[in-house]
Image 1 (cartoon, one colour):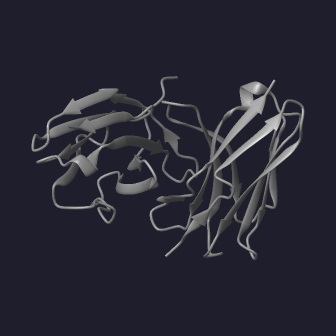
Image 2 (cartoon, each protein chain N blue to C red; image 1 turned 90 degrees about the horizontal axis):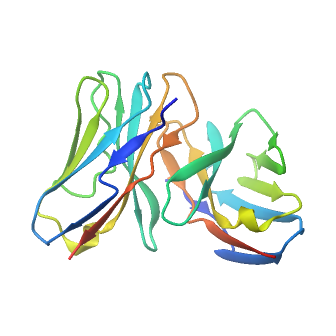
Length: 112
Length: 113
């Protein structure tokens, strides 16, 4: 059974800092991995999706990497801003009807 | 275009009552998923619909939970005889056939008192 872990559960950084959010998964046989953002009381917004054959994806200040063999992904946020404050969720598609297995998320606070 | 919509946004119900939660997927998306987000549990898969195929109900926690999808579009998740442990945010997502990305709705926050 696939398990996804995100540690730490919460992170507080000063504005402008570059930061890395980590995600690990137990079964490397995945189809893709997706990073989401969730604001309080809201649904999920997809940030980046990395196919199993890819090593990384970039969108603006965000860069996500995938190392399937070691069961790890990282989300890099450059020059963090207070507006980046949210919960970041990592989810793995292991191919069985594409149902996603989620980590519990990392709640990020960027201090002005 | 319009995203995934869900209604109601909030629902408070008494223990033992039945509730229905609705999801309108993105037009043309053939796949539809229901997930539940509970405090301390994270997001968990409940049920999956793809076109006219039999749904994957493997994530439903008990037989009090059921879902249907009419006409390949709108879906309703029904919880019978609600319990306090059913309190959670219920999220719906849709996906194009052959696509990879799931697009989520804003969720329905269910509180069972």
